[in-house]
Length: 173
Image (cartoon, rainbow, N blue to C red; front, side, top):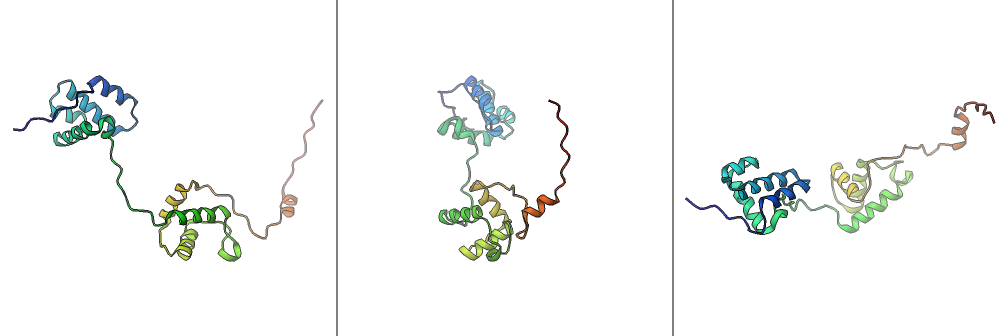
């Protein structure tokens, strides 16, 4: 039977519990508390149960902890699928959204995701989904809050004349 992987000596159970108190990542907290239990002398099987994992998984986290310290106990972010638009195209998309649509050219009075999908396909020859547009807009700092649409033939004078006005209340001096 093999021996267990030793933990690094520059930390103790108290240190890991203190780090776990300040931590915001629940997964990292569970891993820190499981390793703190190992530092206190608990067998690896029971310590793994505390962390909600099996013994082999705890062993893998011990290796990561020994190499990278407490920061190594977080989930590594995967590379993921690369963005379909490059940086220049993202900047141009930002300008498109910022300036807004032209009714005569674009045929709409405000941008919707489906409209931006069409514009991106026409200008950049890139086919993407509405969901991708949501991510692109969030990355550019745009929110999904939109202004109330306004008809292009709307007349401000007619609107003001139509509004109901209430009588002014008597204000004693």
